[in-house]
Length: 324
Image 1 (cartoon, rainbow, N blue to C red):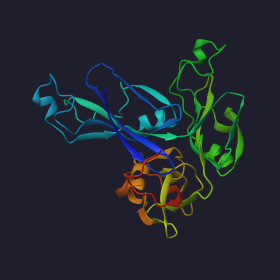
Image 2 (cartoon, rainbow, N blue to C red):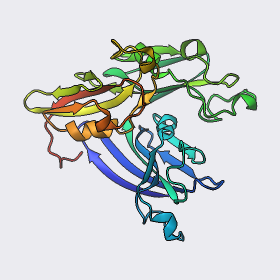
Image 3 (cartoon, helix red, strand yellow):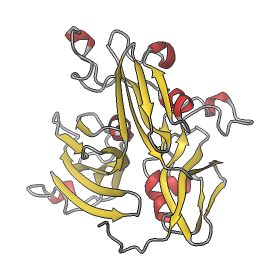
Image 4 (spheres, rainbow, N blue to C red):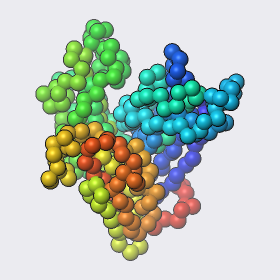
């Protein structure tokens, strides 16, 4: 497993970008495990995840040219985003992970880019209450899932048949948690199927949440698809991006005049949202980002999307400044 690290500094947080390359052959019955992790103070935020081949050199040892020469092969693997975001560590079996074989006969590999973002986490077993609190600042929900993604959490006293399905995700968990908690100093959420529906009948579930404590002064911007988000700061300050998503996480935002079929999918995320917005706006006094498939790609075809950004304006800091 290769890992390439590059450090990015800001005067508020320290983000670490990793690039993981895992080899996998999709045309035979075979699997390789991918393992991502962050430190105790960070959670995974997947920026991009693909399967295919874009270089003839990577994962080429012992392979004939006929299996490595085609380099126009790539397909997005959104399952990585869904299964790993908000976790401190994540292990994935790559067998069947990609939605289809993007280039039959070519020897492929997975490439996943993710950042470790400072965040709080909360895990509550079914029937309990999740209590979230920020000592300084306001809650901003990052990820939420009511279901089961491993066999260990909330397993005590439970028969094995209630723990076997580790691919259990609630399709609507983020919306009710965000509605109950965003912008508050504290909140509580009931971990039950009456709130989130039952994503896997017969499986004992738990509610897993990751969230930020945004400092005072955080602003937000929401623009509908095809519109432009304009971020501005006062003189002497620059933009600091906290979070971003191009997609849809609820059915009420940007819904006017839209049929229900374009609003129903509420677990829609463009994997490159944070990267694109940060690249275009971080450290600038003002910037504009178009909410468009041409900028972010289309994370959910047929769904009407919007661009959400949370940011703050901070004092200028030279790009080469370092923490003492």
